[in-house]
Length: 146
Image 1 (tube, helix red, strand yellow):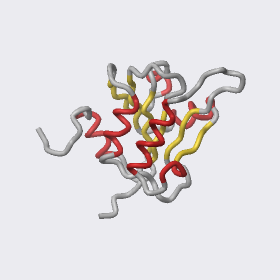
Image 2 (cartoon, helix red, strand yellow):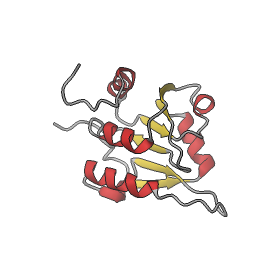
Image 3 (cartoon, rainbow, N blue to C red):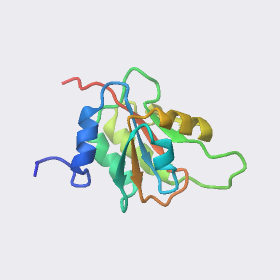
Image 4 (tube, rainbow, N blue to C red):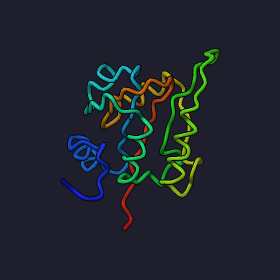
């Protein structure tokens, strides 16, 4: 056991976070995301039974966001005409505000199919049991400046 590490982070996910370098991306995917097919060239970590917000909060306790890009946090845009609401994004904004001095300004959106293409280049995709729609989030790692 280690002190100060959020219990929700498995040893496998901790290893991945440690391995990642500046500019690498991680996707924390909702339960509908095609994790295995999109992530066939990435490390896939299963966190079934957990939601995206609690994993996001735990990851951001250890993971610096890239300060050299405008939006190191990316959300999948809702398709035009899709009547889906995204209240989970408000939770993400609160979590990002607590983790990064840029707050909500660190968050951008990517069109759905472009998000899939960017996710194919991710270092890791985390599969969750999140049931909210359009709850996928991509983080770009920065450098530790301590």
